[in-house]
Length: 195
Image (cartoon, rainbow, N blue to C red):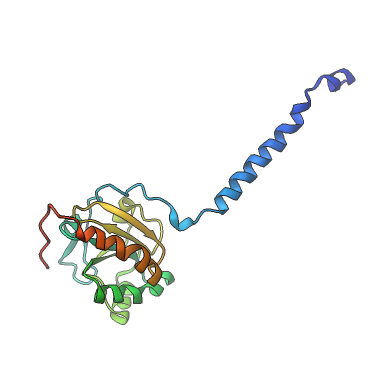
């Protein structure tokens, strides 16, 4: 580089790397401030996807979208290998005893024997448990981890997605009030009979 070309280079060219570094640092700080459990689901406000899965405990029965129609449901994604699911299980048992919301399970990426053992040892809070070892339904529901829980209204519309375990605070402050509101709305669909 000659002396003449050094003198004619624009002074702002030294500011470009500094500006790029500042922009990247700002994006990183913004991302660190976000709660990863609050990732919005693209399914909120949309109909639950079509699915049909064998019941974990009785493979002659199936769990499908039709089971969501007519009553407010919690669809809880869980697996035997998931420690957070085990931590949440007691709360699910409590919900099944004290609430009239329909609680359905989606056993995700799991072994049948292992999942059945968890239910046998810890109790069964679910009305039915869809067995999805290959993630066929999980993909359509947008599941990327366990536990996740979807609130589905009587018309089969997904209203909320809880990422992470349900604990007393999540139940009392978020899910129970939402479910009560949805249950008080008039339904244009008949209630599903018990199987």
